[in-house]
Image 1 (cartoon, rainbow, N blue to C red):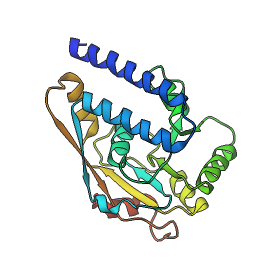
Image 2: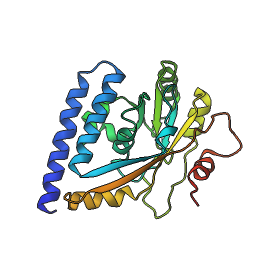
Image 3: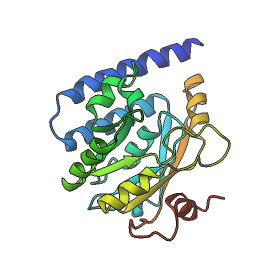
Amino acid sequence: MTFNQIKMALYSTFLTNWYGLKLRKLKTLKEQKTVRAQYCASLLETLNIEVKVINEQNIPQTGNYLLASNHRTIIDPLIVEVATRFHNIQGYWISKKELYDSFFFGLFVRNAGTLLIDREASQMSAFFKEIKEKVKEGDSIYIFPEGTRNKSDEPLGEFKSGSQLIAIKNRLDILPIYIRNRADKILEDAIADSSVRRVVEVEFGDLISYKDRELPLQEAYKKTFNIT
């Protein structure tokens, strides 16, 4: 590792855990959303990464939704948070167990307004029940339909069926979000040299109704962003 990479790793770890402690003291999701956005903006600024929003008018001002984004890198949640930070949507991220146990992200994730999904659990009923409770309270759900990071050269990985199921069972219209750039490459370059300003483009599509069963979610998502 270069000196710059070591310095970036140490500072990022400090920043993440400092905000994790700060989040632990907060009581409401609205407060968590504000602090989450502050953290995300601070870390992306440290990396010298700018988030450019395309079709911002498609972000609803009221209501609750399933926010569905593609996923290539660990900073994707940060990118989505910054893109929506000045809007009224607030909600919970679906977070895998590995992040809860992570030295780097664990403290932050456990206190930042997340819903734990344990893929090794024998039953998922408690997970779906928790989602339903949050939606009834008027909150949105943030999810990566691919389930894990897409490490291929294809624009999208295979969507898991759970995302559309969550939308249907909770009557949540879907707000599709597309991180247009190879954010994994941008992150890699930013860690190596943060003196260069880099831009990530995030596009918001029209809402996809949970009632629309004509296309599977992945096909509707591809159609929204003209992904071939």
